[in-house]
Picture 1: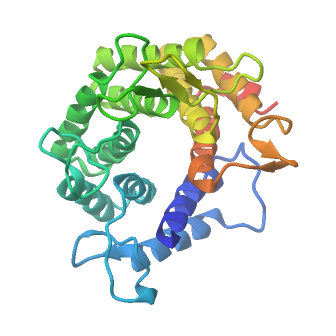
Picture 2 (picture 1 turned 90 degrees about the vertical axis):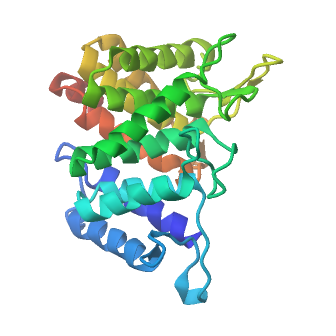
Length: 313
């Protein structure tokens, strides 16, 4: 758990404390140092050079070694990619490929490399692969990302829409749909494949048409396909990832309706009378909420200057 908490922390620092100057900062906080310290502590403690992999076990507790789940490994690796350290970025990305990629091009939940596969996990892996291609120029990492996106697109449910949470499963989740949309629009920025842009738009349309609660504008967790039953749980990471996707769609298309949706979601998320607060405090765990922070930063930094003015009013 310490491994995961530290990896979430460095992701949070990179995406929130490292935001541009239009975000007010604590004058006493050196964000560059805070980020570097958190990254270095995580790397020095949990990266095992002998295995070229993350170790979920704290070495201070003994000599044991355990691979994390692919989702945790992807979160830690995405934080590393925010350092722009080409050597480390290549190492963590290649580790994901070597340890989790199965014969069908999916990234399994564990190092078993079996059919225990989740599309939201794979979307987060794609984010790392794309960063690696962007910063190290490793063509193979782009090729792997394109294969994963192709697999994800095949998990679109033809009956109700949305991206299935587990491959060929019976549940369409808002998080799998939102994270797939973000992976697609990020890949589109690199290869200009128009089908990826359209897929991202379609995912967003599904989220707002089928899973938005009209009473508070937040997003429900998902739908069981066979029964049509809606799981009305609400989590911050779905909202955050959707805001991130909308931010890229604003930049890419110039369509202001995406800006309106993003601002609506952001305001709903920080409504202290809403689902994400209890007694005036955030009630979601950091493992969910860090992607909401990232969404806020994307909305500020990826969108245009005019949109920024609206957001920070």
